[in-house]
Length: 330
Image (cartoon, rainbow, N blue to C red; front, side, top):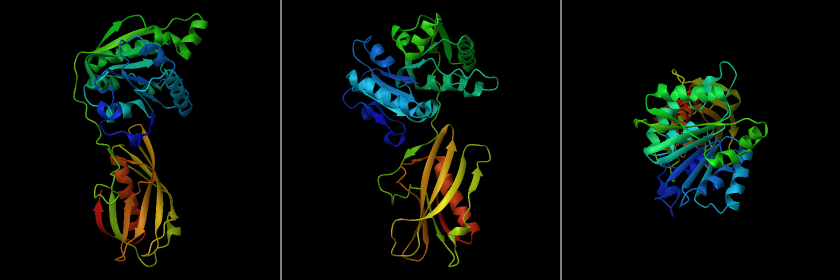
């Protein structure tokens, strides 16, 4: 089953994702490629664990979904997200039995180490989400990345490294077969938590079922009679400490009719903590002559600090165009 970000809760309990098998062990695979690892690995357990796979490639997502369906693995969820966002926001503390990372992108060029997944902050995050006795399993053909990951695990202060042989299933992946044909042997390590630190989420929340819920970021403004949407132009705002970047791309006439006057919708691009969202913000005339600026549910947004900020940035831009701000709710 393929999940979008908006299908999750924050965090998501196994009872929500796997209602028929909530008590089974829970395995997360980061970067599942075409999906052939899990059908092989699942057979090594007496009872098939619950599976969550995360990947950035949409093509891989579709291929893996076909593999899992063909294998009859029904207690499996796939999603297209940055791994750190998924682990930090979706996984409850102490919930996972294993995190599997097979042949990750080593980002081998100088200066690209910050793009690597297995760095000390991720190990600290992983340790907080693993059960006692759980582990991060790494299999890679890249010697320098392997040594880097081992060093970062030690630097995290919460992991010990066990050098072992990889699971047989890891040698059946697309990349393993490629490197085996070249005569290269992969290396494998189990990173076992020595502590389970409390690493909090960022406070993400799903869009409320009721769009009138006051939890939906909004503001109320009074637009001047002379307001001209043609004066609106692309605008970028950055959090002072870099927590988010909001780019207001355009303001369009709304397709939805309003009995109370002109209405528009703004398109915003929001980046924060590895997560990117394109969100819509409605600018809707109200009966009393004021205008409601409110996050739209149409784009399926997750309410993050950056998304809240997008409503605030648009409100400030409208104020700069002559609007009077009557209320801020974000």
